[in-house]
Image 1 (cartoon, rainbow, N blue to C red):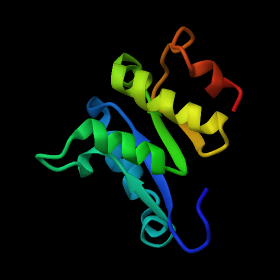
Image 2 (spheres, helix red, strand yellow):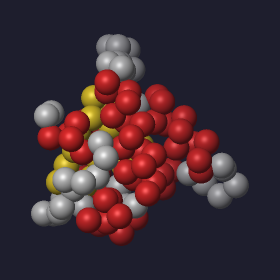
Image 3 (cartoon, rainbow, N blue to C red):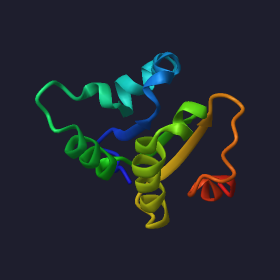
Image 4 (cartoon, rainbow, N blue to C red):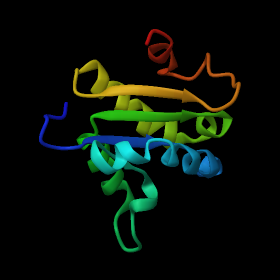
Length: 120
């Protein structure tokens, strides 16, 4: 977890089909982002960077995994199979907090890992 001398690092996992939701969420904690948190999303990756390596590194650094859950999120192998899975592993190890945000009603009962979210 973060200490008092640095910002909390938040990894935002979302489907690119839900970019409008991401834009809204990024506006909400504007003051927090300036002072206390650093919200990272894959749009920070620039051309020429290895996106897999960058996502992996940011997931490892994150204090908080913010999951923007929708049907699009559930349909994404990257969101559920990589990012959510890694965030939940870090949570079990006591190295991160996971915050799921349900963007819309969706069926996730059979998605591996979501049973962990249900007990949070």
